Structure formats: C-alpha cells, structure tokens
Image 1 (cartoon, rainbow, N blue to C red):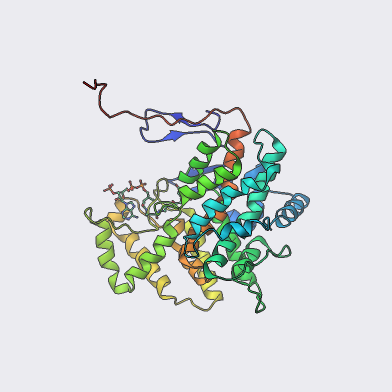
Image 2: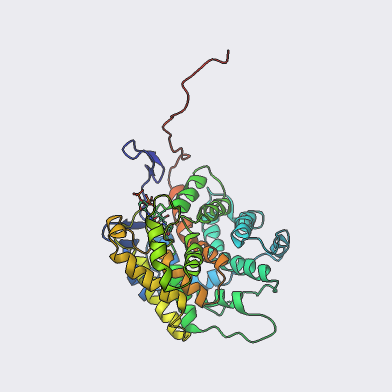
Amino acid sequence: ASGLFTYDPGFMSTASCESEITFIDGEKGILTHRGYPIDQLAEKTDYLDVCYLLLHGELPKEAEKAKFQDMIMHHTMVHEQLHDFFTGFRRDSHPMAVMVGVVGALASFYHDSLDITNEKHREVAAHRLISKMPTLAAMAYKYSIGQPFAYPRNDLSYGGNFLHMMFSNPCENYEVNPVLARAMDKIFILHADHEQNASTSTVRLAGSSGANPFACIASGIAALWGPAHGGANEAVLNMLAEIGDESNIDEFIARAKDKNDPFRLMGFGHRVYKNFDPRARVMKKACDEVLSELGIENDPLLRIAKRLEAIALEDPYFVEKKLYPNVDFYSGIIFKALGIPTEMFTVIFAVGRTPGWIAHWKEMISGPYRIGRPRQLYTGEKIRDLD
Ligand code: SDX
C-alpha cells in the first residue's frame, strides 16, 4: 500500500493507493495540496510556490523560494539539438502529439537525471521538467504557425515567460501584461495536481516499472489528451462555438439529457466532485478578471457559457446527477481571451499538471515499491480444447 495500486474487490473498477500530496472531498468540494485549500493557494501564492509545496511538502521560505526560482528559471532553455526534433512533425500536427514525442525524447538529452535510484538524479529530473515544459509547449505552438522559436527570458515570472515564448516575435516589441501573466500563473496553479486522476495514475503505473521520469511524464501527457480528461477544455470551446447563440442552449441541454444522443455538456461533471469543483470557482473569477482587463467582458462565448451554467445548475436532471462545472468549463474561455488557440488548451493543462505528476512519481519511487499490477475480473471463455 506504499503508494502502489492495491486491488479492492469492493470497487471492481478502481485500484487505490496512499499519498500525502493532495486531498479531495468530492461531496464538500474540497481540494487541498499538502493541507492548503486550493482557493487560498491560488490567491496568496504563485505557481513556483505550489511546485515547491507539491515536491517538498512545505511552502518555501524566502531564501528557499529565491534559490528554487533561480534554478527553475535558469534551466528553461532546451538543448539546441531538440529544435531539430520538431522538424520531424507535420506543421499541422496536434501539439499534444508533439509534446508526447518531445518530452519522451528529453531522456536522450538529460543523462544527469535518468537513474531513478539516485536522489540527485530524481531532483534534477523534477526541476528540468518544470523548467522546460513551458518552453517545449511554446515551441510546439510556434512550430505550428511557422514562426521562429522564442527563447525563454529568465527575468520574467513563470507565467509571464510562457506568454513571452508564445506571443513574442523578432519583428516587434512584446511587453508581458502583468495582469495576464498573473492569470497564467493562477491557471497553472489550478491545474497543478489532482490526486489519482487518469493521467497521474498513468504516471505512477509507468513509474512503478522503473521507467525514467521523462518517459513517465510523456505517458501522463498521452493519457491527459483524451476529451473525457484534459481534452475537455478544448471540447468546451468547440461546444460553445457549436451552440453559437444563447437561443440554442435549450436544444443542447435536451441533447445532453437524451440517452440516445452521445452529446455531453463538456466541462460539466466529474468522477469525484459531486457538488462543485472548487477550481471552477477560482477559474471563473480569473476569467472575469482577464476579460475585464482586455475590455471584452461581453465576449459572446462567455455569455453563452454563463447562461448555460445558470440553466444547467437549476435543471432537475443535472441537479439529480450532481453535474456541476469543472475546472475545464471556464479555462477554455480564458485561454481564448489570451489568444491561445484551442488545440493548445490541453498542452497548457499538461504544463500546469507537471509538478503534480512529478510529485506523485517521486513519492512512489522514493520508498519501497513494487511494479503496479491492477487486477482484472475475467469474464471470457472457460478453458476449452482446440479439437
Ligand atoms: C478532468 O479525475 C480528475 O481529477 C480529472 C480532472 C483533473 O484535474 O485531473 O479533474 C480533469 O478530467 C475534469 C473532467 C473533464 N471532462 C469533461 O468535462 C467531459 C464531460 N464530463 C463527462 O464526460 C463526465 O462527467 C466525466 C467523465 C467527467 C465523469 O464521469 P463519471 O463520474 O463516470 O460520470 P458518469 O459518466 O458515470 O455520469 C454519471 C451520469 C451518467 O448518466 P447515467 O448513466 O447515470 O444516466 O451523468 C451523466 C452520465 O450520462 N453525465 C453527463 C455528463 N457527465 C455525466 N450528462 C451530460 N453531460 C455531462 N457532462
């Protein structure tokens, strides 16, 4: 039970493990990281504080924070030869396909962080991934639009540097808006960790075989890609665009209730939260702040989203099934307001979730562990002879 999967016959479809990192109470809508509630972390700390907290169990003191920030921000560049790796992808590849490939490929560049039995190697791998995920994400975007890669700037905040690498170009001056940089930082905080979700469980299972950290994180990125998981933020925007106008909302609400219609309200519902997702509340507030800063409070998609949320929250079907907006419902609207294209939404989720994946990987392999082996209930043919 030391962070491994154990088979509990009472829950035929799930495995369980022990962890000290994140606590969720789905009925009460509680999410804490090392005991601190997510709304307090989002309002009173920054993303690198939360990375340090997830990795080390405590928020950094001033000197610890300065050292951690300096080390993370001074390793944001990737090996120049990795630039060539991108040229193997079609320009119109989904950036998550690029991220799965490039993050796994880091294992061929960072030999000082592959020996998982070596504490120093584990520490280096954790820090390099936090440093380089935003750089690789922005490179995937730049590559898709045919613009040159923007080198990271060590003088900017983590969120500000990401916006700089996404939107600056050699032909004009790009000033990072501090309000948008803080919103980006908050978005990363809200995605940082979430207990044993599908992608984190994938990282732990991969790690239990002794795979190197880059391969484990690449497996988490692959699992996150699905529309039922991290891909939901992209699906929310596509759904709002399909609804198109507030007058069409009732038709889509009816479709979401129709058992014969595969349509679901993307950004609603959750495996664990059966009351409300505390992250959605913080995300909604950040959304209002960003749209007000940009002077687009009346964004039509936001209007449809708010109307859809109001209707769904009163509808007996959704109330009875305990379907509330989750973290993905408003994140896509903020990303769109920041000028981020929909195919990059899940990539940003992956960047934000990296410290959570790493913290769970480290927690599991830092103590005695065995390879994970989720059990099955065999329902196939009885033993039979060929002749
Ligand atoms: C994330 O695990 C995590 O922590 C994940 C995550 C993280 O931070 O890592 O929080 C991130 O993945 C958030 C979820 C993003 N996904 C979406 O928004 C996609 C839309 N949501 C659904 O696909 C669904 O709600 C799930 C997958 C999120 C939850 O699935 P559950 O808990 O297994 O719920 P269910 O599929 O069993 O649904 C229960 C009932 C069903 O009706 P009945 O079969 O009981 O009649 O509610 C219905 C479902 O049909 N339902 C929905 C619905 N979600 C569930 N009906 C309409 N619209 C929806 N969104």
